[in-house]
Length: 420
Ligand SMILES: Cc1cc2nc3c(=O)[nH]c(=O)nc-3n(C[C@H](O)[C@H](O)[C@H](O)COP(=O)(O)OP(=O)(O)OC[C@H]3O[C@@H](n4cnc5c(N)ncnc54)[C@H](O)[C@@H]3O)c2cc1C
Picture (tube, rainbow, N blue to C red):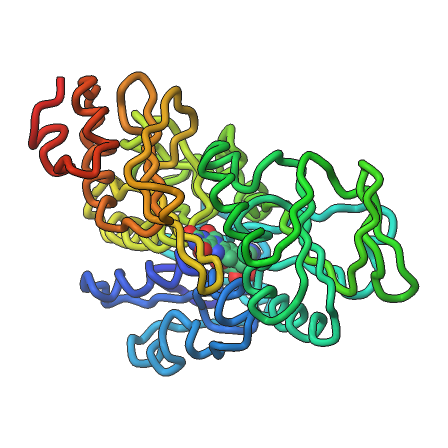
């Protein structure tokens, strides 16, 4: 028999659980809420780890989800430095690393993701870093203090953002990636080339279509050797080779795992076990924007909104998660990309505005339907992009041409305009 009982147990100290706690209270939950998180800090905005916080421009407080006293004021019990080590869904009991057992009414599991580690020769040398948490950002900032050359491994947003941040801090950054073009996996060649050009124009050296073979150095890393034979000097390395959802606890508890490696959930974010919900990076839920397919998306805004939807459903409101997924990425003070979708495949891209002028929206269409939109310097297009994604209409040739015409009014497209 568990020693204590709570109404709502939130497992994971990230954004999904934090926002769930907030919405439980905002929607009138008056029972006990217990949030259990493994990290030493109260929930914070992880994206700052590659941006202002990494550069030392922001403090931990600036990046925190809510000020420290907020949790107590809300009557939410926050256990940091504590893991849930086992979950018994049948009896609704969780075991904590403190040896305490907690019986719960309902639970949200949002254990986030773990970085993919590259186990090559030399990977234990000093100043080889991964980036997921405040502590990693601190180690990188300290590690690059006396470095002139930093190598980033990876061609996606973590490597690009860190390259931009460290360049702003006066380091010469070199990016080594498997891709031909940075960010091409998510945004295609042309848009990817725009972002690569942005990095290069600020002095980042990019080596594409190659990969890490090993590290060399004595004690501390001194060189990165690529499979293609490059020898890149480096006094520090940051690896951004992707993440995998941390479903260990969920899997052990017998929750169903989906094809994308996450906790398979309904559109209400309920897992295969009634009363246990999942959110954020581990959540593989039915998505209305994606025609009911199960998707798993590792974005800040998605975790944030999952937290709210989970809270409403934990309170019995029976609401589907219908927020169009949104992503942003910041390249130091050079600009910010924003994206709605994601488009998992597309057969046509339509450009609105001009990449040369640094203000554009790139539309991704499949069979005449908008599946995603990437914007740089044109945030004003995002609401129409969201609407078009929700409407799921097949656009006429005229409407598709209008997407790319700066003189056309996007608000007139789709249901509010012609459309086919
Ligand atoms: C450096 C960096 C920059 C990013 N930048 C962007 C960006 O610009 N835009 C964007 O959209 N997204 C960005 N992201 C992604 C975004 O931060 C994540 O999608 C989001 O944080 C996911 O939230 P979450 O609540 O699912 O998981 P997390 O934030 O990972 O939180 C999960 C927490 O649960 C804890 N935990 C795990 N297992 C247990 C357990 N058994 N018991 C207790 N606690 C446990 C973990 O330690 C962790 O603290 C970035 C991520 C990183 C790392």
